[in-house]
Image 1: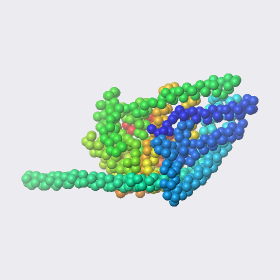
Image 2 (image 1 turned 90 degrees about the vertical axis):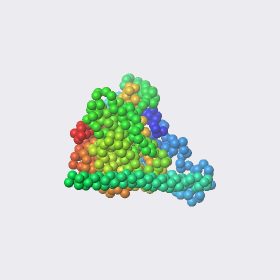
Image 3 (image 1 turned 60 degrees about the vertical axis):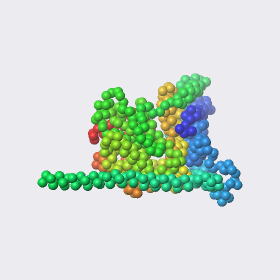
Image 4 (image 1 turned 120 degrees about the vertical axis):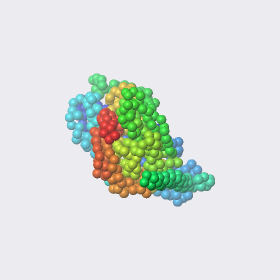
Amino acid sequence: MSSAFKPEAAFASAAEGFFELMKSFGAQAGAGAGAAPDPSALAGSLAGQFEQWLRATQSAGPWFSPGAGAGGNPAAGFAAAFKSGGGSWPFAPLPLGVGAVPQAEGQRSFELLTQLAQLQAQLAGHWHEIATSAATQFAARLGSLAGGVPTPDSAMKVYELWVECAESAYGAAVRKDDFARLQSQLANVSAALLVEQRKHAESLARAFGLPTRNEVDELYGQVRELRRELAALAQAPVAAKRKTVARKNAGRGTRARGRRA
Amino acid sequence: MRRSAADPLGFGDLNARFADTLHKLRQAASVEVGCSAKRAVWSRGKTTLYRYAPLAASGTSGRAARHARPILICFALVNRPYILDLQPDRSLVRRLLEAGHTVYLIDWGDADDSDRCTDLEDYLERHLGGCVAHVLASHDLEALDLLGVCQGGVLSLCYTALHPRQVANLVTLTTPVDFHTADNLLSKWVRELDSDLIRATGNIPGEVLNALFLSLMPLRLAQQKYVRLLASNADQRAVEDFVRMEKWIFDSPPQAAAALAQFVRWFYQENRLLRGTLAIGGRPVNLRDIRQPVLNLYATQDHIVPAAAAAAMEHCIGSEDYESCAIDTGHIGMYVSRAAREQIPARITSWLQARR
């Protein structure tokens, strides 16, 4: 079971967001002394919360989200996975110190981390664009829902409308080619960082006379090849037996026909 | 919700409801998943083949005689198969057992570092192939009925194309064939992934997959459902149903690096299944070689396997006996929604019965 499975934490976080919406809704109505809330002010407030939430939970897409599931971030990526596995955060310096890492390899990790930061900044731009677009759609569609004195039911309807607008804005933005490319780049850079980190670990393993990942993979390849040969050998007598039986049957058939004749 | 002049939005009531639901969620934390009796009958590596015990009630033994050919369910590698037998009133497996079918199910298990190089050929030929061989030998049959679900449907299509004599009838559920339909967001996002790098990284943790699936509709999947739970004032039983689903959603198993890298590249990036350019273990996989009856069930609002991705099968396979059924629900709804529960088991049973 994934460490991200904490429904009560996710529930608490979502409920908190909903209470915030209701507070904004109530405050807007209160400001107008019982009048309908101002759509653009409410939309602005929701957009702010949404952008903040996207930054917190989707900081670098699913590939590299350092926050764990607790506190309502079910979208935790490689980082959370490593934490849950009891391992250390993979992109931190190795416990044996920077001296253990050859300088050229350290330089490569640094470059990748810089690249990752740049990609995350690009992603943040998308979150802002999505939140703004969601707010515009919401303000335009709020219409009659904003009329009259707010009630619990109308607050729920407003919330449902907000989710619809936010998902619509999100869906439109994340389908664009530049966003899709960014997702792939984030995954590639995250993976490259992990591979780089493993290279450092490989050097250490070699120094301590331990088998490296590449060596283990090669051994696996040999086992696989042996398994294939074994399967072929196991099949060979079966096929040969079938052939012999078929030949014998054919012969018997000829003799039988001969006898009858 | 109660409200007053001092509390027009009913915050007090909502707070009480929040505390109550939170308490119910905590109570439901240890809720069980999977409900039908089954036993492991074969295994290879992390893969286990289960056979479900026939149901004693409602004279199923008589019906079983009519449905002598067993159904083998091949689920996706990326999710757990217990969603098909989540709880007594949400169980495709149980409905099939009630209809008198003999049901087998493949659980791929948790890939660990020793499975890093396990590839699609291994999963298809050694694991799925091993399960098929075991079922056929146990029933002294030459062919079984194969039910492929989601990614497991893709594996089932490949297996049927490669070993057509071992599959009498093929049923696919939410199975993509065209991975490049315009509405396939997952496909767009992984189009420029470096599959060699994925392979080099090692097994992909289940958490990455969970996060990826949630990112497709984050507000709906990570917020709205909880707010709806709060608003619905759910009783303990409804909260337990909710938690069972949550358990499954957050329970993606780790993925063997080699197999996942191949799946991303061959299917999502290069769309080889549709284009007829796929080869597994050096053997071409041609969907035209699928000439047995095929029932293709898919969802109209599926955000993971768009309807068009599944419906594309019709024009690719060689079967002249092809039937499809689009159900008005989403991806997960295909396993647990009321519409799916009412339609899918009955449809599968009547379709198979007509072909016995």
